[in-house]
Image 1 (cartoon, rainbow, N blue to C red):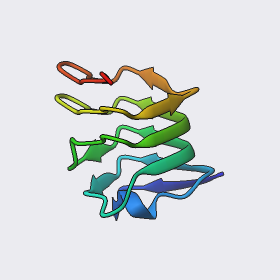
Image 2 (cartoon, helix red, strand yellow):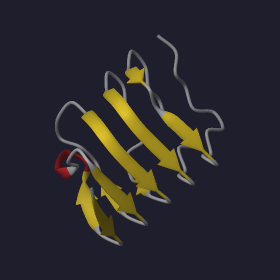
Image 3 (cartoon, rainbow, N blue to C red):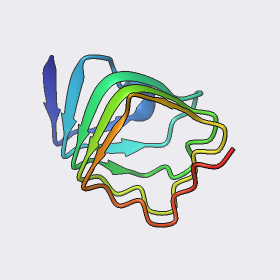
Image 4 (cartoon, rainbow, N blue to C red):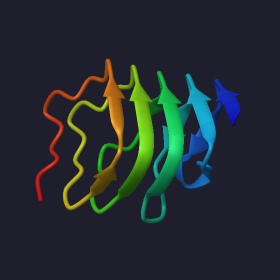
Length: 91
């Protein structure tokens, strides 16, 4: 597992089996499908994650305030010290 630190990347560039630490993620241009990744203290410029697919993803110390995950699929995901105020996981 590689660790990518302090980079600005698109969510489209996220690859499995990596840890992203203190990275900033720009808006995705495609449907989001992310598996086997750790986001450690990362920032997300995107707040609309509707219809996304997350498997075995760990969020540590991230800010997901006001994020929407309508009709998204989250499997075996872990949220540790994540800001989720007003995040919407409804169908």
